[in-house]
Length: 297
Image (tube, rainbow, N blue to C red; front, side):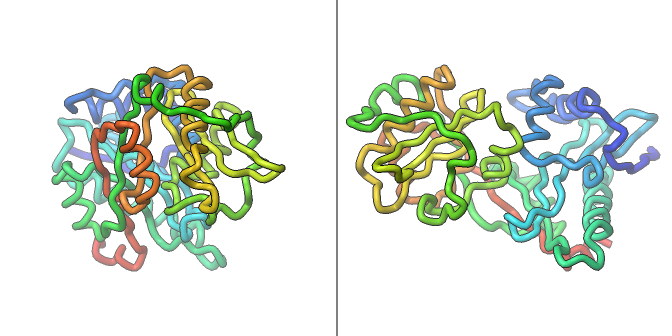
């Protein structure tokens, strides 16, 4: 079969959403991405049509590699939003060809500039051996392991807010320096840039005392929690519980979903487990340094 590799600037969100749905149609839980959800997906994860590529066969998308542009907040790495191939076009080397195109676009964009792209990063389900092995063959290396957990309505009702009252926040109320609030850094789909990308469609709430912001929580409209952050000097005082309950009220969701919780964030994991968080899967965060591109040529 003949394939033409092209970037995504001429392809609209409905066409790209359809390609994702087809690529993941044979999964245990098939993907059902509407155009509206795909637009949110693009906004949240920093989709760049110039840096994303598709493989076309007879005018139809057979495979894709969706990417953002190099982000200085992540060491000038570009985030991979999603990679997929329609079942009938698998095992034809399309992912390798698409990755080559993505990296060349990143290098061309940054050539001769101070902020040269340093590499790519992505997440992949730990039990998806075929995908993990493929990324490792491309030169990606595992960096950390991330949990995906659910907290049901029943779990959340056990969280007592105590004396704390959580209030609505604006994004510009969050501190510029977040180091004292996070044990480990959020992944790109949960970082400040993602909150900005989906603003104003983000539920953001915080707890203050004497004008000081002690902690905050951020959730997307579907009940996915992007951030729970409490200042290290004020942990284990019930602030996280107050934030949980407020996010539950604001989203109206039957459960809150925590995506990409670093397993090394010991305090946050203990907090989630205390309230009966159910782990549904784990993911590896993997990085590819651009000098490794020579292995693909």
